[in-house]
Image (cartoon, rainbow, N blue to C red; front, side, top):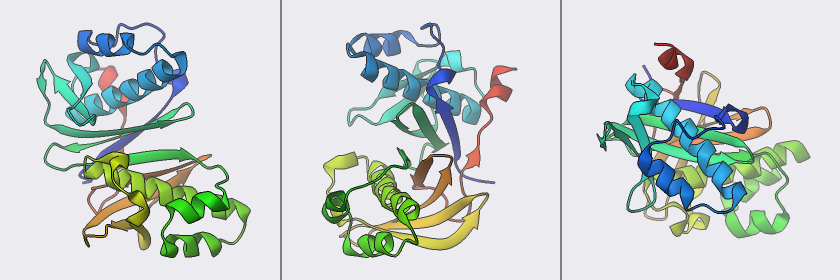
Length: 230
C-alpha cells in the first residue's frame, strides 16, 4: 500500500459558506483582504482538510489546517496536532494536497502547463535540466518539461520545510524510469548531495510533483466523498 495519498480540488468544489472552517481558520481568513488571495487560501484549506479527513478517516468538521511557525500547513484533530503530514499547493483555481504519516515530511506542487521564457529556463534551471528542456520534441513538450522541473524543485524544497528560502536553482531534478498508476519517478539532488525522491504526472492542463514519498509506491488517489458519506 502507498505510504501517502493525494487529492486534487477545483475552486468550484469549495462551499460558498464558512461553516466548514474552524474558529482559528476563520480568524486567519479574516486577515486576507484581497479577494483573489482569500479565494486561493480557501481552496487550499478545503483541499487539505478533505485529504486529511480521508487519510485519517475522520469527519472534516473535527479538523483544522493551521500554519506552523515556519508557515507549513499542519493538521489539528479535535484541537490537538494530528498524526499526519500535509503539503498543499494551489495555482489558477486548482489545488493539490498530499498527506502521509506524521514522521514523513512531504512536499507537493502543481503548475499550469504554460510557456516558460528562455530567461526563466536559464535563471532557474540547472544545466542538466536545461538540457532536458532543449531535448523536448516540440514546444508543448518543452513547456511540460520546464514546468515539471520547477514543480520538482519546489516540492522537494517543501520537504525541507524551507520552501523558496532555499536556492532552488542549485537543486537538480532528474527523471527516473519507475512508474506506478500514471505517476513517474523523479529525484531531486541538492548541492549537499542529499537526494529527495518523488513522483510526477501530467493531468489535463496541469503538471504536478510530490516529494518525500515512498520511492516504491506513488501516492494513492484519495476518495473524500466516501468519508463524507459516513
